[in-house]
Image (cartoon, rainbow, N blue to C red; front, top):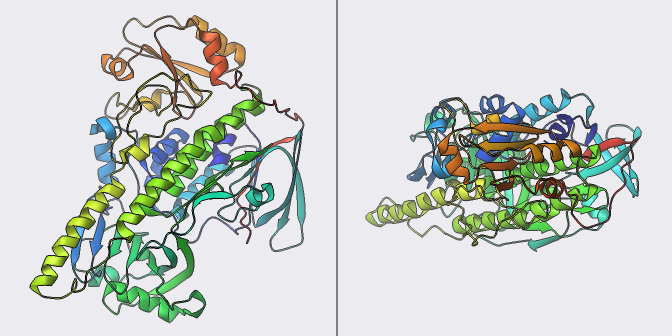
Length: 556
């Protein structure tokens, strides 16, 4: 994602990733609406939406005793086709340019790679591990080694970004530690989890219930969650290892038996891959950078995957850092603008890992009562009780406009914030506001045109109403600074009412930076949003160096 953001801005990028190619395992499976809006901004949202589940496959979250046993509850969500049909009719807290999409990361990465490689100056190198880097005052020297050979390369760059995962080599070399909850213990979603990527077309033949995207089992023997990958028989199945179950002792046959216990039927299946991971993390790095070296994604935050927040938070990291790196490299923004990356993104990681922990507690600490699966009156009553709870949990975990759209940067030094009473930050509540520091409120101009479609790729100045103020001062200050500013006139009274001001300055990441009734303080406004009024040590750019090196390599 970072390579796409930088490449689109003409920044040369070398990316090293020690994997042989894009992901084989399904991994993250839920793309939030905000992430889809970023894909729309980059021009490939429809390409992503066409992948994964069939167009008419329901993306429901369903809870069962076992998949062939009793359905306990279901939170209904639209298929990809329904999302396309409904998105322009939604308003209020769910007004968005895109709705969420349930698609495996293995598919998304292929699209991201294709578009990154299409950018001139972007070099994607799979099968290469970064083994050393040296940060000096005028750049970073990065050495990478090919995994399958002894070949080595050294690249000189202005900046290095480590997106190299939970065991980040870059973070550990910088001496940056995680802080937070490192090991919550729960009946489910706490401790060692066993993941199986498998193919089982028979699943849809033996399960008597409507298909769902996310399938959760709730019983005393084998609790699990399982995402449909392709809607035809591939699944990402995750179950918690019980006492005495060790990964090294588990064969493919035993892995299949785990799956069959959750299904409640001796289905035939092919195990494509398997492995363990640890649930229960809510960790955030103590710092996001040192000198010219930055971190993003799992290298700075570790989530328990409840709510699907880790991948989406990582995409927002890349978007936030991308335009700032480009501004610093081009000299449009002060190099100190990069200090705002941690100031803005770290509090969001703390916030989002906290929400994920709440969701994990809600499902993981709620335990099945004895007799839940019995065909008795008591069993019926227990299933009704569990169904009510789990249905409520599903809505709480997946109806989250507050998390999706509500991240704010009010304390940022490059935002011209306004004094306003603090709003309650809830997962299920988002109140659109154009107060500087948050996502620009969205509205549909017509059935097929999102307000965001009118924004420029870089900065946008909205002039709202039938008689908007003149903006000569702010456009002149922007031109003098080298800012790529698009001026968009919208006469709509509805848009003017939504934004509560006739002039609104929108950042490249679609965050409101400033709003006002006139541009009298234009010079101050432009200097502030470009980081030219931030205090701190100026970093000298090396004009002869590679612009950016990114690493996805993961080290044990």
